[in-house]
Length: 113
Length: 115
Image 1 (cartoon, each protein chain N blue to C red):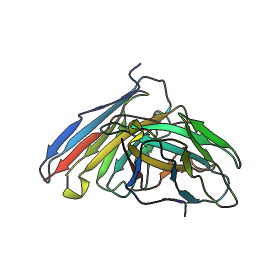
Image 2: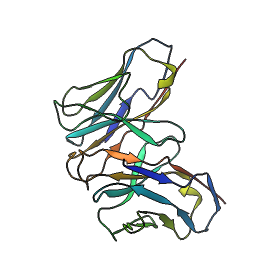
Image 3: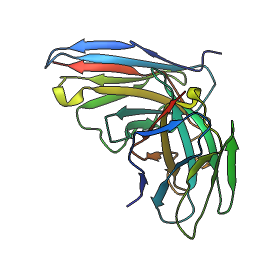
């Protein structure tokens, strides 16, 4: 079946450190891939997305590249800030279904000053 | 625009009680979704509505019913609440359910506790 696996958290970093959150997926066909962010007490917000192989999604200093050969979509940021502390969800959306998203379990990021 | 709104924000129920979670969107979206979020499990789809007048089961529909009241509103009902339904519930909407590029917009969530 279709699934998304993220690295377990929490991830704790100091401000200005480099961030990588790993995400791998299993799916048939050519899904779209997404990163959502959930700040404390809020709903999910789309952070970035990629719709085909080798696409790079980017937003707010975050980047992720759709790697079909390794079925991965790792999230990276060169220099994290305290305000980036949140839960990050990787998700896929199959090309053949009616819009349903399949989420990973989420990774909590804590950035300390 | 308010986006996606949900009521209530918090609710405590006793086992066996019923309640309805309300969701509304003002973006003229066709598709709407209900998810539940449990620790360590990400979000799981309960029900969705690809368009007004249609609803379909998602991954975890047991114990829930939904109503797509009109294009704007999509409610989730617990007929007889159980402690296993303690969770945070999110409503979402998207322009259509057919384009894989479509972004889903999420509401702020309802935190439900069943005692």
